[in-house]
Image 1 (spheres, rainbow, N blue to C red):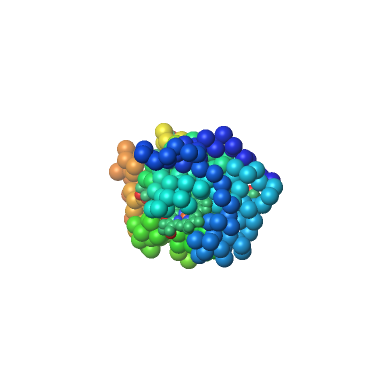
Image 2 (cartoon, rainbow, N blue to C red; image 1 turned 120 degrees about the vertical axis):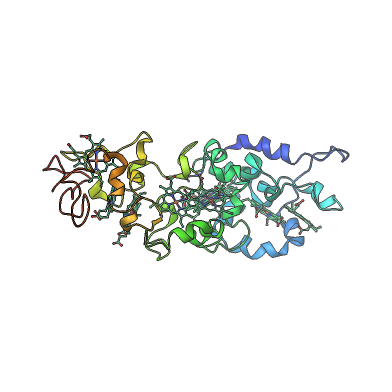
Length: 290
Ligand code: HEC
Ligand code: HEC
Ligand code: HEC
Ligand code: HEC
Ligand code: HEC
Ligand code: HEC
Ligand code: HEC
Ligand code: HEC
Ligand code: HEC
């Protein structure tokens, strides 16, 4: 089983389940799933049918992480509370306590430190914002909706970018947001939730990977953001996802020579006039003609 049981997180569960001031300090005890579903009957269908829940209910799981109370903490105080509070609800929590119900079994896949550093965690999202907990999932990986639809439901501005003149075929269903992004982050502090360098652009555009005999030294200081020096990742009004139109892309760095002949071709530009066609890198020509 690829699941890492981080039982140390149990202390978070206990801390969060502590009764509020004024309530009796008697620690809550487990009452069992049968009791929970008597009142929360709407959860029963998914509890019995979703494959994931079979792991969670399984007798093989340590009792502390098993069943409804594995995520919500012992429930006796809740059942006795006339207002039915006194129980953990990740929906009304943030940070590690909100993620703990899932991370206690998934600290291998989703590292707590990386997760807490993501703009997603910092904006108050929890695992349950994207993953279905008690209902039938609508998408893969227990996601509430098909992946791209899910992302776009909170990022409508990006939808417009994927409709621009030149764009990656995401709305056409030929690729997904998660081809480039990892919503949980590959590591702490990954900029823009991007997948690590080689996993991002050249995994699909292999011919641009190099090494070439004549490399075009275009990388800027931001390390593996090389392709974005000239390309927009989602969509662009310029052809081929270019950041600027035509030779504007090259003038970012070569303004010095570009105003003198032969650098003002009558038709086309630096790369479409038949000259520096292999500017991504060439194995035969220092000036990238071919
Ligand atoms: C006697 C009926 C009853 C039982 C038994 C019961 N609940 Fe509840 N629970 C309620 C009611 C009523 C509410 C408030 C309305 C709602 O959210 O459905 C509630 C609310 C909750 C909430 C949200 C609490 C909040 O403050 O946001 C959670 C989580 C919860 N129940 C989990 C459980 C779990 C887990 C069990 C079993 C340990 C359980 N319940 C057993 C009746 C019950
Ligand atoms: C794998 C962990 C996990 C298990 C197991 C689990 N829950 Fe939950 N529960 C959550 C999370 C996470 C949320 C918050 C969901 C969200 O953010 O939308 C939640 C929310 C709730 C709520 C509050 C819903 C609301 O709208 O405020 C109730 C009630 C509840 N669970 C009952 C149950 C019952 C009953 C069971 C057992 C049949 C159960 N849960 C099993 C993790 C779990
Ligand atoms: C009691 C332990 C336990 C808890 C708690 C738990 N999981 Fe899992 N989860 C598993 C096991 C076991 C698997 C299957 C083995 C694997 O994929 O590593 C799994 C698989 C998954 C998968 C992959 C499913 C697929 O279709 O590929 C996702 C996504 C997932 N869990 C999300 C969550 C989320 C979100 C939560 C919190 C709401 C959660 N899990 C809570 C044990 C748990
Ligand atoms: C912004 C949406 C979003 C949030 C929030 C989110 N996830 Fe995910 N999760 C995804 C997507 C999309 C995938 C599928 C792509 C992938 O495997 O990276 C996924 C996949 C997974 C998987 C399964 C990977 C596999 O091998 O199939 C696990 C486990 C998981 N998430 C756990 C969590 C946990 C734990 C949290 C909370 C700390 C969480 N997720 C929060 C979107 C989200
Ligand atoms: C429930 C709403 C929600 C869902 C679903 C969601 N996001 Fe987010 N996302 C946010 C919020 C809120 C932020 C932080 C504020 C912002 O930058 O817009 C954010 C931030 C981001 C950022 C970082 C922006 C930056 O400036 O660094 C990326 C990238 C991102 N999300 C991608 C995704 C992808 C990919 C998916 C689908 C797997 C997804 N999001 C699903 C709400 C969501
Ligand atoms: C081809 C790879 C790729 C795909 C596919 C992709 N993104 Fe991005 N995305 C990026 C890169 C690279 C950045 C960083 C832009 C920058 O900072 O220069 C980014 C930035 C973002 C941001 C931060 C705000 C911004 O626009 O700079 C959000 C939010 C975002 N993407 C969401 C999404 C969503 C939602 C999808 C799917 C509908 C998606 N992305 C698909 C590569 C991609
Ligand atoms: C998951 C695979 C995948 C990844 C990752 C990917 N691309 Fe693409 N890219 C494609 C596909 C598919 C097309 C469309 C090709 C077609 O329509 O024939 C495309 C097209 C392009 C185009 C040409 C657009 C046009 O209008 O013809 C450029 C430029 C491009 N990608 C750059 C990038 C950059 C830069 C990155 C990294 C930020 C990247 N790609 C990441 C699959 C990918
Ligand atoms: C120096 C600027 C620059 C850099 C850096 C750059 N590109 Fe390009 N790229 C362009 C321009 C300009 C075009 C349009 C070429 C044309 O129209 O003939 C283009 C076209 C493309 C195309 C579509 C046409 C083709 O040749 O297949 C893809 C795919 C592509 N680039 C991927 C990448 C990837 C991946 C990276 C990073 C490894 C990258 N580019 C880095 C400027 C650049
Ligand atoms: C991010 C900056 C940057 C951009 C944008 C850029 N270049 Fe370059 N280019 C360089 C650097 C740095 C060198 C190597 C230093 C040198 O020899 O001048 C170079 C070298 C060259 C050379 C070889 C010159 C020589 O004398 O060896 C050619 C030809 C060239 N670039 C064409 C292009 C074309 C065409 C474009 C637009 C598609 C472009 N460059 C965009 C930075 C850039």
